[in-house]
Length: 151
Image 1: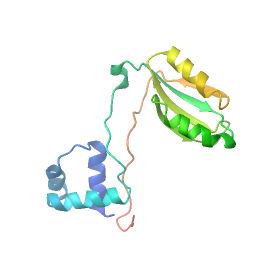
Image 2: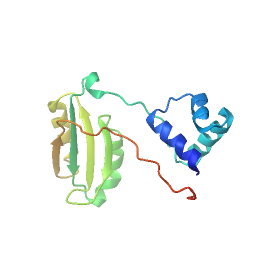
Image 3: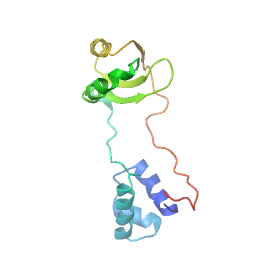
Image 4: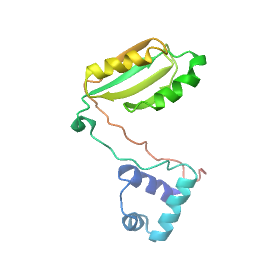
């Protein structure tokens, strides 16, 4: 991966819908050359996909929360398929500390959140934090790898 690949990643992270022609102009390459670089980054798994940033509040989902859940190791084989099937789960991470899972959810009401917490408590103890505001929205990371670094 060279400095051009990093520039492409930075631009795509900011806006994945940038036209190929515009990307090519910014990195001083042809559109086919840029397309080949992007395809290579996709094949390597560096670019995992392209997503739309949706304002869930405007769709009536007023409650965002983080739920800490204590899941016994023996329950993970049952828990993972369950949590992947839950449409209001935005993210689920296996973490260190007093709880083993950190789950980000989004619901239309606290009643819906309460019902969901009741469902997951079959896997273990929970602790929930409701989000009042978000100072930093989901964003990518800076792409600052060294020039000679191979990925």
